[in-house]
Length: 160
Image 1 (cartoon, rainbow, N blue to C red):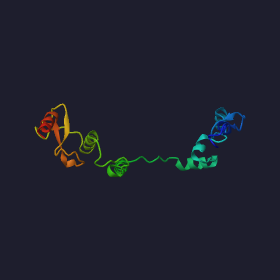
Image 2 (tube, rainbow, N blue to C red):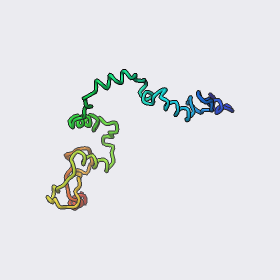
Image 3 (cartoon, rainbow, N blue to C red):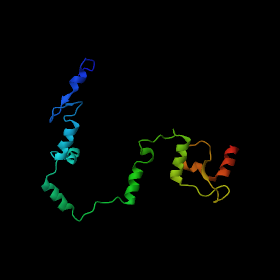
Image 4 (cartoon, helix red, strand yellow):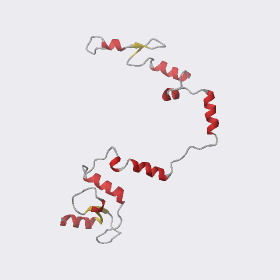
């Protein structure tokens, strides 16, 4: 259909298969008739989604075969392995060294955990602990990070 022709919208209109009302686009039935069509059970919605209709005989066979069995649950080890399979450089969203300051700190917290003691003064009672970058280069090197309380972190950053 040429969209530049005068009546291209009229050419796209079709009649409903059941009630002959004008239908736009690729539909073959109007909204009322399609709802009735699926409600009647002519084609069940589940079969529409899966691509085929299960017969009553096959449903009974499957029910008997599954009786007394439980669907398997993922173990913690299996979940961990699935997570590791798409983490780091294998992930589609991996940006390498081209990341922001906040993203890098989130990455460090993910791999090194939440700091709870200061490596400099040894306090555990501070309100806030940070991961501080030692070299100031902000690269993805976990050995280049140290746990500091906020006051020690500010002192260290002023000294650079």
